[in-house]
Length: 416
Image 1 (cartoon, helix red, strand yellow):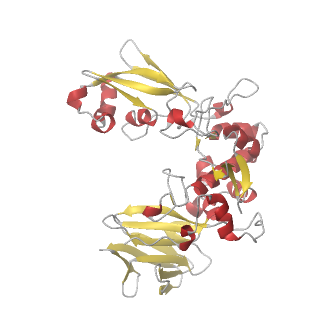
Image 2 (cartoon, one colour):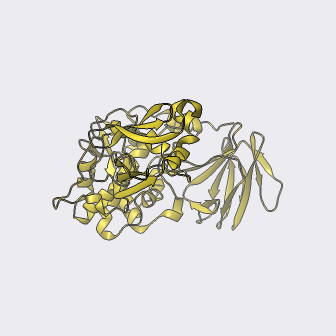
Image 3 (cartoon, helix red, strand yellow):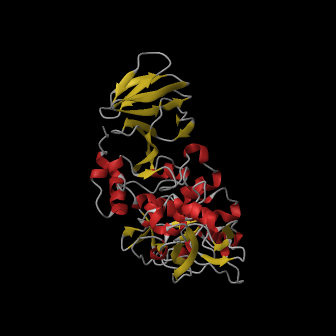
């Protein structure tokens, strides 16, 4: 049984950013820079369709409520720990002492000042656990939007020095814009965003850092809009010298603020050249190339290995305006197939599942048959280049200048 979405989402209209402001309370003053508990509540999918039991704990005690009715089920003094396991369509709660209880969904709140932990990781707000029909347990962290960002920004931009603060603040605005634009996007799954790279990496309180917390507080409520709506605030690690228009690298509609921009500094270097992934080389023999794609041929090409034969070579079929490989031909012994955009990176993933760094590369075949890809940058390449933002911050640019560069034409507004 899936818990119904809360009433707050039912009221949201298409103008999400400004309706959020109204639902939060238009009469409320702009929050103080150090205030927590700010922003509308959001729901983050921490564990999705987990097939193992989950542990809820808090050193300060736990309050466990029926998430559908609000009835208090258990109140445990700290340190407290409860095991949540699936029991048919119910969640079975087992404490060290007492009789197990079964409910459709349970909401765990801290009974004291110590936060709730899920699997040992502390989180602000509450944790809800419920059974998903035929698919294990979901664990959802519900908390105010600004508190969520405290656990996102430091993971997405990394630990940064005071001289790089502008990049951290730009990341905070981009991350906030992303989640505002994705409210209700995963409503059928019972939450707003995944707590992983499927949306934005989120580490809860364990990930929080002083400089990123300051960046979240100093940009509180700020998002980027275009034509009155939150933008698709895409970002990536390293552009390699020039970002890409979104339609060049992903199967997405063009956007005026996601066009290709140069990352070149006045001294002729690229701002993102400080990235450890600015340049890279990937090499493999024809046999290793075939090994990379052999298990994916049906999924990738819609053809059997018998139809394609061994994949023995590559050919760049088309480049995009920003210079990236937009179409790559895979030459089989019997047929040649062409892949585009993100599918290129996925098809060339290594044995560990790590996809190709980017689609910005040159191809060379050595005399011994070894295929070399000489690449630039890391990630899809559209929107804000994070290492470019760091380089720009070091050069003295402000976080507003950074955002204006990577999202041209977008407007910075306060929504609460």
